[in-house]
Length: 281
Image (cartoon, rainbow, N blue to C red; front, top):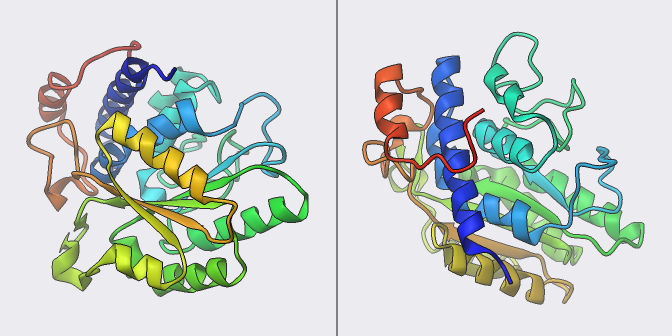
């Protein structure tokens, strides 16, 4: 039986990591990292078949996760460290010159858990399609997961990849959208409104699920449904409803913290709202 409390505790610690990393670096993207924290924590701790032991960029024999929204690197680094891919003490080097933990994930340092350099938005879904097809050609019974953003979904390449995946029946692919309704220039609706996003994905030939991205039970149920729908000829998209900056009252629901680090004083106020559960790095 899934330990919901363990998932919740880990998510809380991941949020603390994110806040401390961007504050210490003086830059970074806390907002989207924190809105995606709950379901990415569930993915790594309960859903994906993966292990840091013997990890390689080929992804052979493991489920794979690709972060298309590369600016959410603090989330990826924290969850990788908290699941044993590298020491948590390394989180303190985030965005330092020469660090393996660059502002956007890089493959230059062969950091365990990072399959592709990302940050140029719109590309991750295409890479995920290729990785999933590669696993199918190799006869692997593994799944490729990819995280996209709702602002990122304004990119044309997302929809080219969507057509490709449906046409080629890439049904070992499960994508997620962090649907927090915010992007760097304001609300998604004010920049290029996405309209009925579920209807769009279904029209492009995908199975599509909506879920509360901050309710652990709902998250687990969404992943279970996605896995049940996969392997039946269609790729699957999960639209997770989230709040930008979730967990900190002055960050929630605004694009202000999309790409800005809090001051040490504000970080202290934020950390006072987020429980320390596994010990700070």
